[in-house]
Amino acid sequence: MIERLQQIRPPGIRVQLTLWYTAIFTLLILLFSLIFYTTLYTFLASGLDSALQLRAQQIAGGVSNDSGNIVIQDVTGELPGLDATATPENQGQGTTKAKQLGSQSDVNFGTLVRILDAKGQTTYISPAFHALSLPSNSFTSPLHGSAWQGTLTAHNGQAVRVYSVALSDNGTVFGVLQVGESLTQLTSTLQSVAIVLLVITPFMLLLGAIGSYWLAKRAFRPVLYLTRTTREIEAGDLHRRVPIPRARDEVHELALTFNEMIGRLEQAFTQQRRFVADASHELRTPVAVIRSFTDVALEEPRAFEECITALREINAESERLGHLINDLLSLARADEEQMPIEREPVRLDLLTLDVCETMELLAIERGIDLQVQKIAPATIQGDTVRLIQVIMGVVDNALTYTNAGGKVTLSVETHALVARLVVRDTGIGIAEQDIPHIFERFYRADPVGWRAARGSGLGLSIADWVVRAHGGSIDVESQVGRGTTFTITLPLASPTSVQTHRE
Image (cartoon, rainbow, N blue to C red):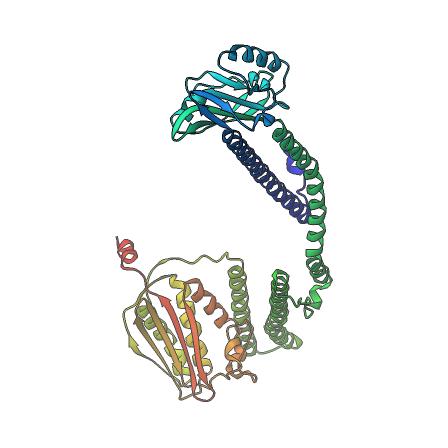
């Protein structure tokens, strides 16, 4: 069962948006219906209470107290079933008659009025009022100065709203007037409204769902156009770009992102093609040299010394080919993040002195003055082997592009939380347009080859990767004919890590 559920594909984004919109519309319609129904009920109930109060005022205006007897004047027409000529002596007969009429009356149609004296005795009552049973506080509250309102249930199960108010003459309460109104009409009105809402709601939701789907489809039309255009762009056609809409909306940002991505892909493919071409050229050169020496040596018998010379040249080219292959493997592992970097405290100043001592013979051979100007103690967290490779690569580059009689200086400084290794030379310099590319693989800033014709063009690329892997950076400043300065910045190791390593 679980596997079947996992195999079910989720609906498309347009369907999902339609479902979300429909769900939101449903909640809004339900909320609106609830508020509307509650407001309508409150309004109708308030109107009914106001009508009861007005009716009570009209009736109370025609009721007076005459020497302890309640007298009704000018309102008998509004009170059907009441005997205005009734007196206390024949009150029992009037009440019996009213009960007989009340047994046949309906609270939905009959007038609901009752008048009681100050002792709680019923003086006048409408026939329909006999179907009601009022609580005692409906009489006592008006006597104490507070009108009473409440909803009661008649004997036939109908809900009735009753209003009870005191009758007074010159501030003296002589009775209580109670008027009522059936809630059947109010309930019927509310039921009709509820039915209308229940009938209309499904159609509104259906229309809302259709409209939502249409709007979602229309909104995603530019995205579909971008998708179609992107599919048409092939790997060899990366110079094309998707059209950018005029409206600055999410689709506009998406188109810009697509174009930026395609630009990065185009640059990556260009660099890859150039890398393959350069690697093939660099690998072909030593192979061709080795093949040339072997062909010459095999053409005719040679003297022993000539064979030794040929073997030495072949060995030198083989060694160069081996270095080139190792560099390519290192960069490939670095790209795949499979080249681990050790993390241990390393004295950058001592490494610099060791490299300077190692490269000194090469500098003397080329007639270049290699020296250390300023060395400050600097401990960093890194890989000793990789850092030596970086320093030797930068120093070898400086020696390669410096004429005989030139000068190469090294210095190590500390600033705040970083250490800086500065390598300066008085060589031929780098053109301004070449500086952003010198860390690219197989890139050479010297078009005529210089001494770099013997190098692989990968040293600075590897150095840049190692430094960035250590959380540092390499900056280059150069002027043609005046020399170049490489500044390697690496974060200093924290005292805690150094102490932990010692322990």
